[in-house]
Image (tube, rainbow, N blue to C red; front, side):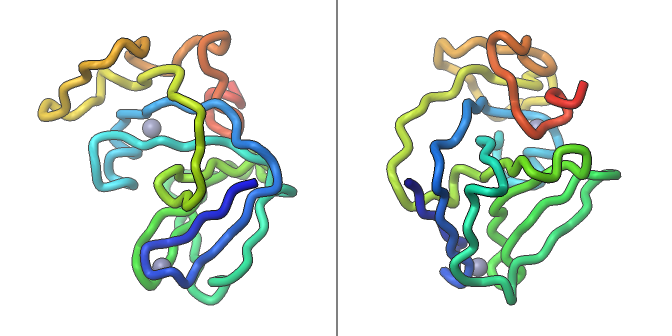
Length: 146
Ligand SMILES: [Zn+2]
Ligand SMILES: [Zn+2]
C-alpha cells in the first residue's frame, strides 16, 4: 500500500495497510527530532510495517523514558517512533514515504511550543497541547495512553 525509505536509501520499508489520522506537532521534541518547524507522524500497526532492507543501519534512540525513535544511522533520517506502552503501534515519519498519501492533517498540536519563525496560515484547527480525541486521536502517542 505504501513504500518508504531513508535519505541514503539503505532503509526501505513497505506498509500493508493505510496509515491512520495525523496532525502537525509543533512541540519542542518534534522540532528537535525533525530538525524543522513541526513533525507529521501517522500511526500504523507494527504487523503492517515490513522492513525490506536496512536493518544494519536502523537504530533506536530512547528520547524519553519509554519513547523510542528509529532512524537510519548512516544518513540520520527518522523513520518511525513508538512507546513501550503501545509497542505494536508505530508512528511513521511521513517525510520518509515514497508513495502518494492523500490524507490531510486534522490539527496543529502543541502550538504553544511553536517556533516564532513559523507562521501558521492555514485553517486547520490549532491546539496549545493535544487536540481533543474526537478531533484527532493520535494512536501510539502519549495522548493515546492518557
Ligand atoms: Zn539512510
Ligand atoms: Zn510533538
